[in-house]
Image (cartoon, rainbow, N blue to C red; front, side):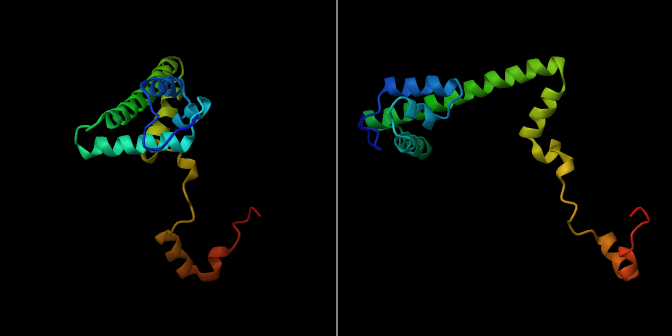
Length: 145
């Protein structure tokens, strides 16, 4: 199946077929591959469509309209996939709050992230002061060793 980056061979049927697979959870490049379309081709379609959308200008020809349609449909499929799984997590959280905890750690890692992975080797002014004051005595084992 010959395809080009400029969207020449993109069709609504191909866009819809890719989006159906994306909605099930496949990355759009994998969905395209499954349909015989090269990953770099769909990346180009998405890049070109995104440029048109971000320009704020209306698509000026059928090809541009198709590229914009493709981007909008991919985004809608991704949103649908995420929404469905967020609903599943919320349902699970009614039975076990760890579902909510997990979601919060992934959504807001700076606030709810795993505190056990903190880097304890960072600068500690108090430790530096004690080491300066005590010198070599600060490195004396505390008797457990």
